[in-house]
Length: 263
Figure 1 (cartoon, helix red, strand yellow):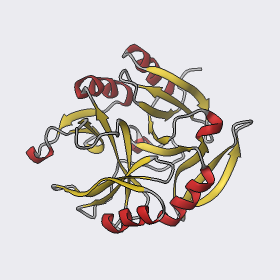
Figure 2: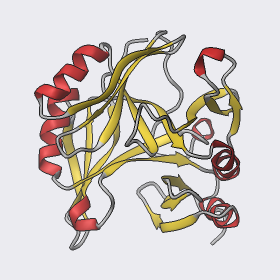
Figure 3: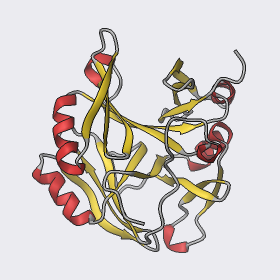
Figure 4: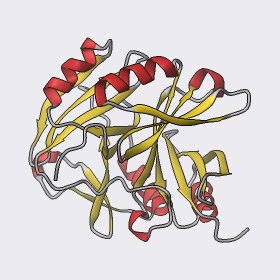
C-alpha cells in the first residue's frame, strides 16, 4: 500500500518503569501488552488490540535523552531525505536515522519550536493499523489512535513547517474563546488532527495523541483507580463523543476519546 507522508503510523512510550505503565494502559486502553518476540528489540513491548499492534513501550535509554513520555511516529517514504528537510526548515535531528530490525528505519526530530516527533519508513508495505479514521463510532478503531494534536507556542510557524514538510494545509478552525483557535490539519483524505496555541491554552508544547475507548467515563474511572490523573474533560467533541486528557502515574500525558454510555 502506498505510503502517505505525514500519516500517524505508530505511538511509543518511553518509560522509566515499563512494568508499572504496562498495567496502567492495559486497564485504561484495553490493550494486551507483550514483549516483542524478536531478541534484537531488547525487551521492547508491543500493545495490541485483537492481535493488531497499535503502540510500543520501551525503557528510557541513555543514548536517547530528552524524550520522556509518548512520541508520535509519522510516515515517510524516505527517512533520510525527510530528516534532512527538517533541518532545512529550521528543525533538528535528535536521533538517527537508524534501522530497526524487521520494522523499518526511523529518526527522532524536532520542529523549529523544539517539539519532538518521529519519522518512520516501514520495512513492509502493509498499512499500519495503529491509527484509525474519525469520526468515532466504528468498533475497529477501539484501542487505536484516532486523533493527534499539536500544542505549540507559534501555530502559524508550525503550519509553515509541517506544510512544507508534509503538504498539510489548514482545513478550517474552531474558536476557543480567549484561547485562540483549534485549527484542523491535513491534505486530501488525510485529516489526522489539529494545532492549537500552547501559549494561549497553557498546554505543554508537544504532540499528543488520543486513543478510542468504548466508554469515556469508565476509562477515566480506571485512570483514577490505577493512580493516574484526569487533567481535562470529558468534553464534548463533534460527532457526539467526548475527549479527555490524562496523566499516567509517572506523569506521562495521553488523550482519550469515546462516547458516554451513562449520563
